[in-house]
Image 1 (cartoon, chains in turn green, yellow):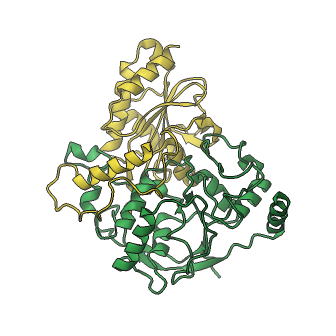
Image 2: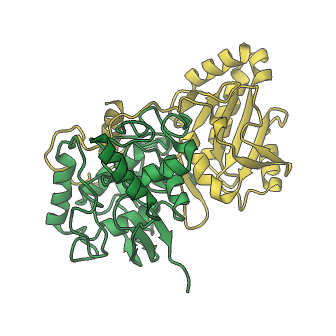
Image 3: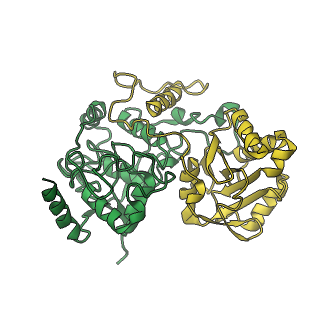
Length: 256
Length: 211
């Protein structure tokens, strides 16, 4: 059984990087907490996005070529002590973490390093949210109660012990899979989600509190799923790993 | 579960709004007040358990000299992020740090160092940083103001647990954070906002500086 697993992984690794990306946008993102007045709509230029989250097999290939990112080799600064915890070992996946499942238990630093190795980068929050606003049929489904309800059902479900393979759900209108229903995903500027007053001239002592004015300026209060993602991103630190957080990569559109 | 509690608390505070009379946001759908199981579980503490200097980052100080993050290795250091054009929170953050500095014993004060890194390398040139240092009355024998390369701003904010985003006019929204590290750069204490009591950080700074 183990031999078969190793051979399968070897076969996967000998293939060149074949991550499939599609074009998303351009479009407009309406953040639930606009960063400032007048910025309720943020233009997002066209970009390329991985159609599925990065898999265990892909991440294993990365750690084989970049031994500094092997489990056990990474500084606790860059990933906490649960880094790649589901894997059998630094060099081996497991029954709980199969080759085509989304890789989890990776920190922001690890995700970033992977994307750089793949000649790409992490998507920004704006890019991710723009892509995630789409249903199978429309670009912006964030005012569709059924679409939002389905996401909340996922958020309310117990996490499965073994994650499903990537790509199992229907793609959205951009051709991207699994933005909802699989794993939480790291973004480049995850720590830009700032539910606080800005630091310009302020009128009250209250405004230095972190959770100050943001809620008062919330728009689209019906999109509770988006609030959940704000809370999730706000709760993370770059070195954290969790069993339900993975990532995918993005890239700039090359000028012809 | 601590992260879950933290997020729940944050969200509870946000829904309450901090004191202004506004229409409350629509109530959340009926569900348990706890985040669902799929939410990120508590994944660690608010301080990484390793020296910050494990990440080598180049900086430029207020004299234009090339330095790096571990400039003050061998000393206990208070690190933070700021920007020179900031008119409210940053001066408050610096004055809070100055107060900590002043409350240290002479022995500890002689040992402590302060490294404040700019969010805004484009505008915070060495000249601008020197000006800011003078404005704030900083002792440059113990303080360094520095700017990173532009691509490293996000990296440093992640390292120090500082949240920020850049506004359209070039200003920055940001949290006000102080991180105290020991002589090896290992984080020991953290003040996460100006609303936090900096007593614990002061006590740890005194402990590190006195030994």
